[in-house]
Image 1 (tube, protein in one colour):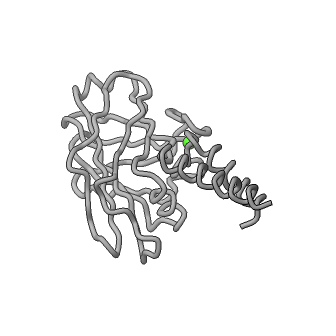
Image 2 (image 1 turned 90 degrees about the vertical axis):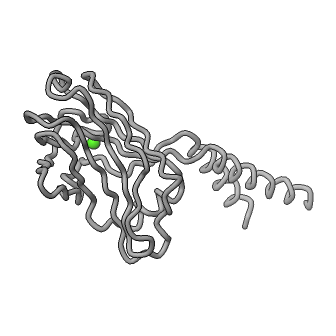
Length: 201
Ligand SMILES: [Ca+2]
């Protein structure tokens, strides 16, 4: 590897520290996400309310209870991005009045693909019912990551809250944050190559 390429890789590694890689932002529509809940109907729509990245978000309206929704078969880029991290973050905006229809809410994550099959988190992630935007963290380090060559792969999310009247949550800015340790290792590795090359000159 020539020195310039190593340096470029190193700088990319350093600049990636703490920077987010967006998986879904719903700027172009539902981006493949669809209701998969069975009896509990989730109405998915694009919405300007709750947009924290760009101008659009995903709204989910349902009458309470538990329901899954999921991506279509994702492009390989989504799998590669997930493989480069162990958790993703999701901004969930709770509108005024939500706590009036449910005193609690949570979400659940599952992966499904042609290699490992269905696997889901053992515990749900709490959604605060206070009005405003909350950043949820989904740690998927305990789930088998999607293989690099995969016939198909889907991300499934579920919403859950008390039964009752219609209520809506807004999702946006689903992104992974690469692990600082792995990015530092990459950056230091690049600097080490440069140092060795310099000693040879
Ligand atoms: Ca967005």
